[in-house]
Image (cartoon, rainbow, N blue to C red; front, side):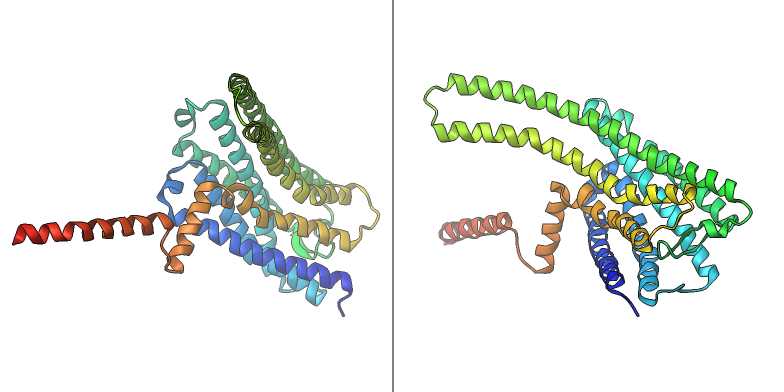
Length: 345
């Protein structure tokens, strides 16, 4: 019989699965529909991150949901080994993809004139190759050593200390190395690159603010409401960059830090950890797959424009610009028709 906490956790996981599927499929459709997005180098990293999130939705998340509902071990050991392999591979690959996206954005902002010469599709393919090799190495080692299994603490098939009987020290070294070279490395890269981006953005904001204030001083007869709007826009501009950077780093920290810290504490503290806390940290890690499409794609202008075009096409509606152009063409043809008839006569 499920208790109230398990019911809430199951509903949370189900919600994450639905949101992750819809949002990541939307990103994939936008990528396939818009050739401009496909031409951009960051699109390769976004595509890789989207595939990782989608595979998480159809492999690891449903198994965790089944484990919460049945309060037991769903599936056989072989199936759990496969899902545990995917859990390590997909999580590692997704983290490294976020690091690659942050490096790409740093180069684009700090070196805008030489960006296309520094970051090319070949460089993106090499970076993706490293993320795959890195992820495959750790997940293959864990699977070959039979260190993955059903972990009741997280209600999922993942790294399990109980499966490392007789090799506890090796398992500890492996787990620490895994999280140091994925989570910690990615966090350092995110902080360094995005703080550099924020520094450049604030510098440009200061230059714009100086020009705006000089203009306001020269325009003596400007209406107070217009002046206030300019000042409000200055404040919004300063906050916009800070909010974006905080979102990139904050979602990563909030979603992955509790899970990774619990993993490390589990290694060195023999005391029992509450299964409710373990499931909560795993759900937070899963929620990154639901937030990534909005953080990196769907809130951007290019993706929003593509989504609106797709919605209009599905609903068989025409954009306002096309309808106005069509009406102008019809009006022009109607005006020219009598002249053509007169010429024919």
